[in-house]
Image 1 (cartoon, one colour):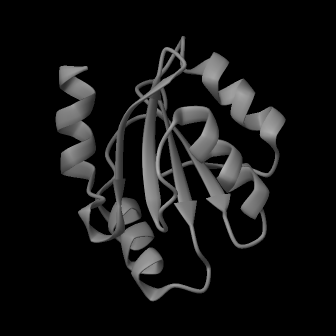
Image 2: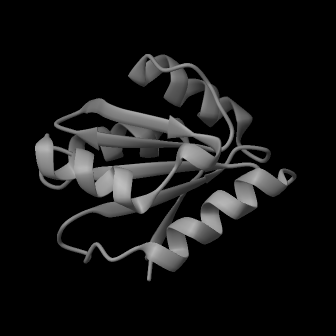
Length: 114
């Protein structure tokens, strides 16, 4: 089960960057209006088997907090997509994926090699 931590501000993105120096963090950017985003979220939740000391999972409602989503794109130098997942380690985005390419298996592969 994913222990989602909600994100609602640019300051929280900066805190995630800092936190990623201690533990890898993922940010899931979710559109509450998009069925593909809902499918990606459900697939993550159904297959998540990272424990809380391996990775922290952050959730952004990008419809409600669009400026924070734009800040994420600028901060981590990624193209904005929805849905989108970013793996943050040591303050940098080491992996990003979008739409139905978002899978726990892919995260595990990247997690274990980076």
